[in-house]
Image (cartoon, rainbow, N blue to C red; front, side, top):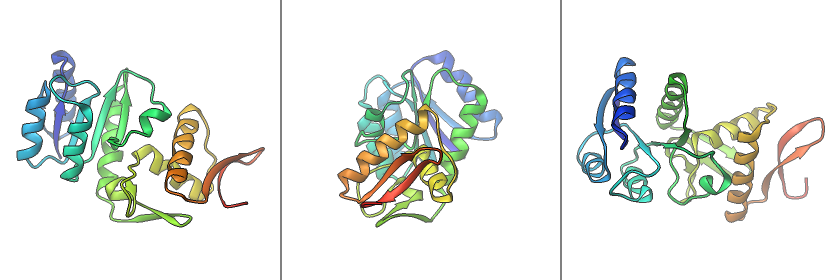
Length: 200
């Protein structure tokens, strides 16, 4: 897979480039926003991996450029992912918080690229999720791979828990509200989280 890796710390850029190449990917590495933007515009990139504060460009501008070309994106962040991260209009396909292990990077790349190749939809009450475009179908509301995975778990009736799940659930409930959907995710004692509609 052809990956555009944009990161300003050269040592980490070199290490991540080596790791991705070792896994068989073709990697174009850049260390600032103008280079990333130029390569994104003219190359056949399959995945963008960038940092949250790449010099010379606003993250939203880079993510919107990737979205316009239907290129999924991963943002490496130094912060814990919060609800406000997940409610940004320019939302990446996934966040990868530092520090992370090589296996975390591999898993994120596989998850995002796998979903980007899936031409399918998931029904969520009156809404549906277009997995391939990481958004609610027919809307501009974007989703991360983690949010899509959580919706899949809930649809199967799996139990979900943990801080990451609670953060994603809070963001999804806000997205449902913004879309005027009667669907919401609630916690039920001894049963865990489940999707409910209207007055269920």
